Image 1 (cartoon, one colour):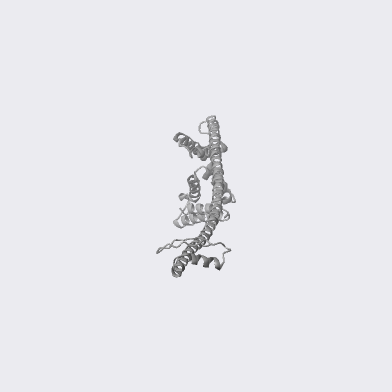
Image 2: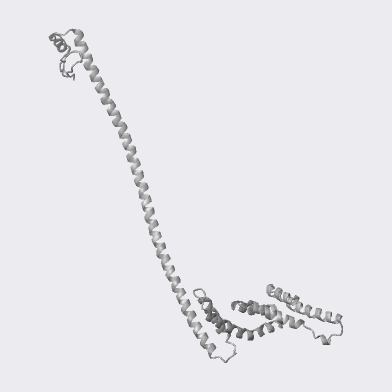
Amino acid sequence: LLYLYLSQSFQVELPQLGDNCSASDIVKWINSRSESSTELLEAVEGAISETRKKFDGTKAKVERMKGDEDVLEACARSCLELRDRLKMVVEAQAKEQQLTKKFDEIAVFDQADRRASELANIVRARIAWKDGVKAIESLDEGEPAPENVVFSLQDAYNIFSKYVTIPERGEFLEKVKDVFLSWYSTRVVLALQSDTPAESLIPIKNKYDLLHRTDDFNAVIAHYVKDQSSLDLHEVSSLPDLFVDLQRAIVTNYTRLRENRRNSAIVRGICAACRS
């Protein structure tokens, strides 16, 4: 369809012709106009140019709309991808929170269980301490406490000392151990006099260690070795004899102790005592 437009330089009313118009219809319209052919041609060309501009504008809009659709599609795809990623993140955070909650619950349970165990250990230690004190109070003055009572008191005191220090209990325990070890030290001497001194000394030393009296154990051994190496000077007639007897005593102690090497630390300690 051809529409009517107004020209900027002059006004020419163009006919509105249908799709079934013929050349004779156009000639009839031209003859009905008073304007010259040139003016009519210019008006028609102006209308065509204006129509082409609008067509180009519409075409550009359509192309822009197509480009916008592509952009929108890309944006939609990005949104979908972002949604999927956000969903994954949310699910991961939810799982992490569940795990954290479970870990917290486990930690609380472990802490409560640990405290309950500690409380039970303290209760048992107090009972053992009380029973041990009663057993010692029933003994005669200077009588050593039974071995199981002494070690029970030591175990109880080890538990107490983790939480609170009570000097009175420590002093009481040390006195009990002094009396007990004054009697128990004879086992060290008997072990040294046995055929396998090192092997016999291992369990004894372990008990001294449990009572935190390793220095006392070493002192007993050193004292025994010195006594075995001492000489009666009144029976020595000359200095060479003294040297020979002293050397023989030291060699004897070395030989007996080196026959059994299952506990090299004890052997080295005893040998050091011999050298001193």
